[in-house]
Structure formats: C-alpha cells, structure tokens
Length: 106
Image (cartoon, rainbow, N blue to C red):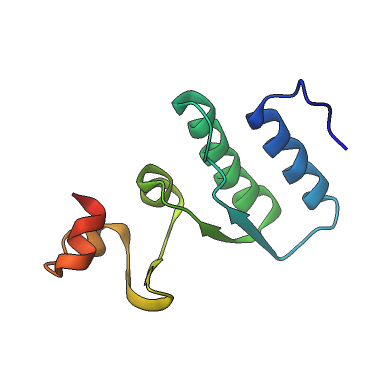
C-alpha cells in the first residue's frame, strides 16, 4: 500500500520500480501521464524511455496523450470502436488524410 500523501508522479515511479524487480520483457503502461501536471508528465515520459534503454524492455503504452505518443512511440495503433483502425509512426498518422485519424490530431 502507498500512503495517500504521495503525489501521482511518485506513485507511478514506485509502481514502475516494483515492476522492474520482476525483470519483465514487456511493460504495459495504461495512461501513464493522466492526471499529472505537464512537468511531471514529461518526467514520466523520460522515465519510460530510460527504462526501455537500460532494461531493454518493450513497452505497450495505452494513452490519449499525443506528446507521449510523439516522444516515446516507435509505432502507434489507433483504435476506434474497439478495432485497429490505423497504424503507423506518429508522423505517418499525423499526415493522414483520413477524417477519423485527422480528428485525433486536430
């Protein structure tokens, strides 16, 4: 259990540290920057990148945070109505002419 006085960012860091003890090959992050201020959110994004490099883990990140996707993702799969609607790099999806994909970036 974590004390209530810990900040959201600190709780996320502690959870990640607990996960790394298990030496996973893949780490699932579910909305890792949600509810954080922009500075702490950026620190979490940098931490995800650092973990990928230092521990050689793959990451599966579920997020609506475009900044996170742009910085940390090599490939993006966009789900719409529970289906894989589009996939590609951030730049490829951002340049898409598909109206549903465009709506996410506008």
